Length: 121
Image 1 (cartoon, rainbow, N blue to C red):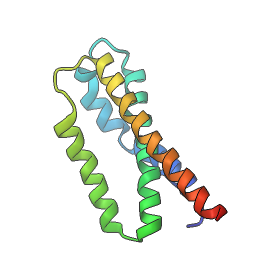
Image 2: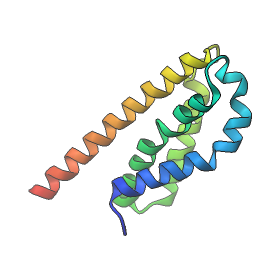
Image 3: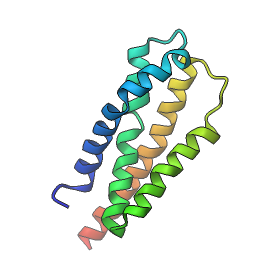
Image 4: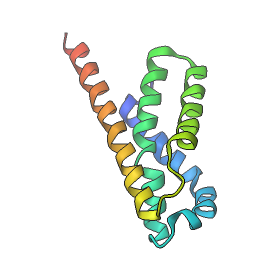
């Protein structure tokens, strides 16, 4: 990789969020409810996508498999369809996105700690 896994993942996460901005803007008006739509979209697109892309970049860096990356993306889509409760208000959805991002950032921290330990040994 030309850049570190962390830099690659953050850049991809931001790019992925921007890529989905218009479609999520159109599709999120009802889901946001009374929650301010710009803040809703900001949380929705940039809370969990950067850490998920960091994890994807790390997996790709260690496997070299594009298929695994595709399957990871598909698993995220399936997770959202099956695990996100339907009857949530906009503010409850924001809490859901933030909780999911905390889990993913925890995984990123664990991966980076293991990588640093391996590097130091």
